[in-house]
Image (cartoon, rainbow, N blue to C red; front, side):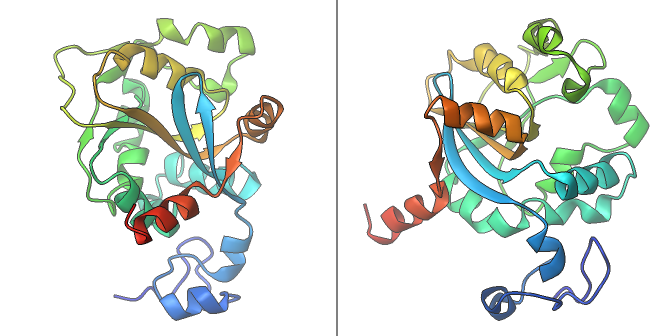
Length: 230
């Protein structure tokens, strides 16, 4: 069923849509709201792990995530990965999604797991082998505290990893510490491990630039390879 109202501002979904988006007729955000999101769609490297970033964590993205998480607006969940849904399925169709953990306190408070809700339109297997030993929000921590994330994120070894490539997935990458810790806990896995984040903080993206680790338009490159049959 075609969406008639923008899920974020509730205005007509056709407002300010590009011609390409208008032809597709499958948007969940109007053109005005989409224009406020800064698409990055880039590949980088986090230590030895390929990392793919879809958006920059800007004011609009922050507001949307806050509205869904703290405002418990689950109806907003489809907007986050919608534009990249098909590309994610095509690119990672042989992978299993590995979610980073939320605290038990936050889950009890919200009554749902935000990233899991965001992924409901993506029919891929999901495993959750991590847990947090205490309530901990990365964005509120100092650099020194983030370095000691290994005290917070732990692995539940009763949950086995599937014999497939793994895709570590998180909504916001602030410093990369949580992803690094998660990778360290599963890096003995014999299949390929990559990471995908919905958005990354501008300072993190800037640090990738300084290290020469930024490569744009990752999905576009992949689609060309697939179309050519290579």
